[in-house]
Length: 324
Image (cartoon, rainbow, N blue to C red):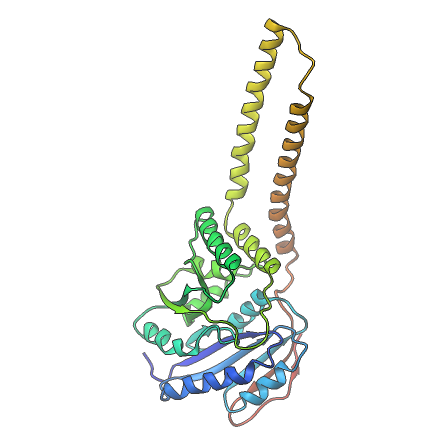
């Protein structure tokens, strides 16, 4: 393996101006410890920040080769990851957050596994004490449900913090889908992989941009993007309910023939009607999730729009340019 291989860091940012200086210091120390065995580049994806994130990056990383792609608005982290994969040119790519919950000190170990032949190296959160009880339980539940419902298995508690060989990046670029669940795409692509356990600490500054509602929507996107089993399950439930209804109808006819017709059962009839009505609405909602994704895909809109970009190497810096 070439000792001067290019390592490109993909770093999505959104209103992280106060975190960038600390992140820059940690990354500088990590790069010094690497003793020049690699050439490091930074690819920042500014996801429509409204604070001074871009200015902070340009100031703190002025001594490093870096690129900043600034979106025209906030498109979300999945779109930012897509942009990073589209534009990263290194021999190896490392995706990480700027808030230092993904420890830079783990990067050398990632690179060692890469040199040993692993094409994907990902961090596994073996201790999530920094998360709330609800978040820990919901995360565990999501991984269990996803791996049960999908033929594609994702490693439990593995986030976006990972190393990707150039061959993996080129494979991911061939996936043009709009409703993206990047963790599932990593697993779908395959390649020789290695998990590295680590402790995910709390953010050093600022607040998380991931509300429970956004996490819920991401989980729904992941499940419906990689599994048809919700449709299949409700087909089985529908067949079961229909079979029970026929048995109930037969039982009613037999009772009427032998014992006469009784005028009672209003409560049980209303319970059955409301239950089946709710069941039908739920099934329609599941159909809607799949149809909505088809609708989004057929329009063919890009996942993101880059409004401005900056390129910097130690010798020169370009002015921001408009990008269509």
